[in-house]
Length: 322
Image (cartoon, rainbow, N blue to C red; front, side):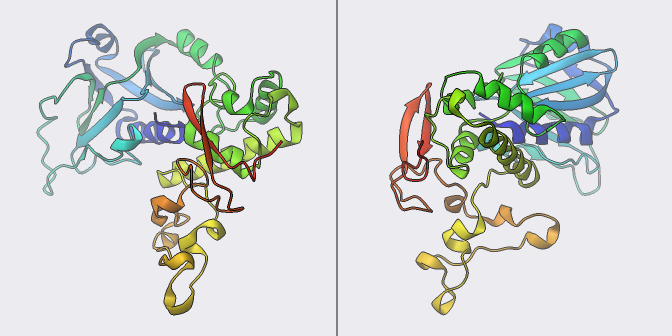
């Protein structure tokens, strides 16, 4: 399931390519025909993300709410002017269907729908197709506000008072911090990857009851999540390791070979306004997520994994003790 950084990138994409444009809305598969008719021929005023949910606000005060869930994804395409920040859908489909127009700028409209397209949005310069979402509905402004009011604070908004509200919510329950971080009414946008990585980075036992989490530790956890998720928005991937903890980034050894015989990472992206994270190998990206049975990057203890709340939880028993 896409985590919050992906949905924030999607909101940026919609603002870039559709903001201020009148859109034709349809439902090629037919399941959303009534909803599409309600927003058809109206201007998209803004796109916003809150946690894992996308809200597209139209000029007649109706909002298209989309939750991609496990299988949802957007595809984008259009002429040469139809470019934006990102075309992320579900993580495994990043960039899979972003189609540019011909070099001469000619654009004959969107192609025939492929597969079960729930919603198609079309402007003068391009189109977006939505497939497989968990939720897709048209709401009034009041209804959309009611949905958002049930969500916890979003670290990528990081508004005044959000940190304090997160601290209050996570500390009011005896439920483990690992389970609470996945509850969208406690913290909006965090999924399995950020959950595991944030707890490791702060050295917190995943099974620690929320009520036992010290206020300062809860505030530091919020700050770390806000920082790493902001990196995810910028880079389009989840990179949580520090340079010193990456085998391919610890400097050059004998003969130009990095620690463990792995060549040093390319830092080609550094001069392009990013951190170079896009060049980090997948194997170096995380501390504990999907590294069960491998040595911890910091203490050497084997990373553990257990089923918790229907999801796999990864942690280091050496670094994350109560």
